Image (tube, rainbow, N blue to C red):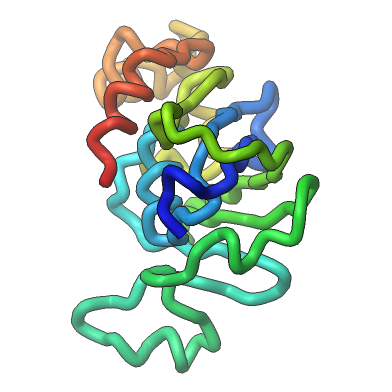
Length: 190
């Protein structure tokens, strides 16, 4: 089925354990592969795709094969993300699954299929329709490291205040979310 004639999934991606929640709502084609969904999530959330990832869908794990060790997925009992389309895995509205990025920091994202919409050949996909809050910086130490990071950058007397601001930049705003920037970057995904 062509992407133009495929149903559209409205999904909500929420970074688990983030308080207040960090999330994005997107429209994607039901014919999106898991490999492409990984790239979409990276852009929508604001990650840099510098770590390994996996999906956990209905108790089956999927990941990208490593170029230097293509057999590792079988050893880990995972399937490849390359040709698996969401339409083959999603059973209906309300379906949920996990996307984990950076196994060291363990950024787990809950993905919920909120709606299944009819095809719309005029709709350019993927597109982010709304979201809240900035993505945490890479390598900050997971959700708990991010909480400590936020405390430090808000408190000028904190011993790590200057170090963190130098690392992340003075203009980091944890409440910022730029929908136009996300969508401009999503247009580059093929």
